[in-house]
Length: 256
Image (tube, rainbow, N blue to C red):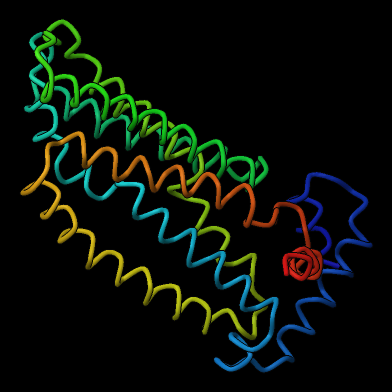
């Protein structure tokens, strides 16, 4: 009875009996099922859920957030803005990252996962493309862009706004929604291993890009992966918000 009272408080409604019984039965069944690495790869729904999770975590890292956090001031120095220094631009960038990440953590779970991931990826694509065009014009043409020094700051701030709308948080949140209790640990191990490999490889990729190409190529690289993330989110990611594990796995079962 106490559980139902808590459930009513969490769901903000009084008629929770049917949903409570369904979820209780699902959890008890999942706990009773044993999971193994073989089940993770041999059962079709688990395999597709793992591909979705690994794809999202990879797109999350290749969206460029780690690189831009590390090289933010360097990028603003290259932009050459006269009315805002590179130091001030970096402070604005990090403050926007902190503020929007905090706000989005309270808001993002109220909306469709699939929609927010797609919109977030598209927003990142457009923001990074804006900066790629700016640095291409600045580095490869004779056009004077001194009066447009605000563009990189605007582009990076809008990038952060788009990123925190979905791509920075939802891949982690969906880890707990795609798998049953019995197989979740194995799935998290595999996805974390793939994530670690991406994190290790990314600094080397950045080093090669910065050493051999102009800055606009680096932005184009991350723009490409954000566009891949948008397509992947729209066509491959199942909707998980407000759905039971059985409903999510039925959706995954249809994606054969």
